[in-house]
Image (tube, rainbow, N blue to C red; front, side, top):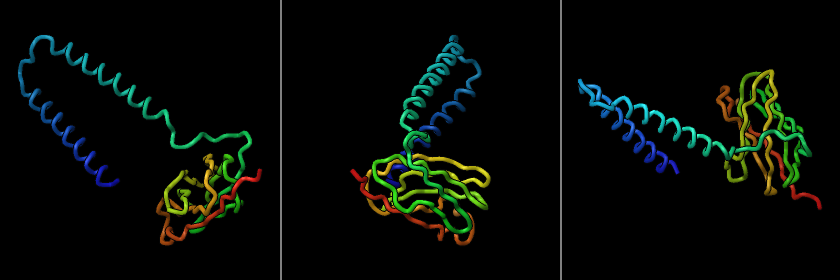
Length: 169
Ligand SMILES: [Cu+2]
C-alpha cells in the first residue's frame, strides 16, 4: 500500500509543480490577451464547484458512525500513563458499542485493533473531556486497545484488550 501512496504523492507533487511553473511563466507575460480575466473567473468557479463536489462526495462515507444513543452498549475507557482501563471485558458481536473515552493525565489516542493489528477505529482521549466513538464488532475474537499518541517513555506499554463474543440468540 505504501509504495502506491508514495507514487500517487509523487505524481500529485509533479502536477502541482507543473502548475506552479506555468503560473510563474504566465506572470512574466507583460500583456495578457483580451478575455484573460473572464477566463480566470471561469477557472476559479470551475475549481470551486469541482472542489465542493469532490469534498461532499468523499466525505459522505464517514469512517465511523456518529455516537448513537439507542440500544448501544456503553463501555467506559480511561487512559493514563501508561495504561488503559476498560470497564467491560466481553462485548457481544453485532451490537453497537458506545465507547466513552477519557484520560486522567495527558492526551492519548485510543485505537482499537483486531487480532491481525488492523486499526478499526480510533478517538482522541483528552483530559477533562469524554469523547465518544461508536463501533459495531462483527467478528468474535480478541481485540486490542493501543495508544496512538506518543505520551511518554512507556507509551508502547499502553496495551489492553477485550473479547468480542458471539451474540446470544
Ligand atoms: Cu498514551
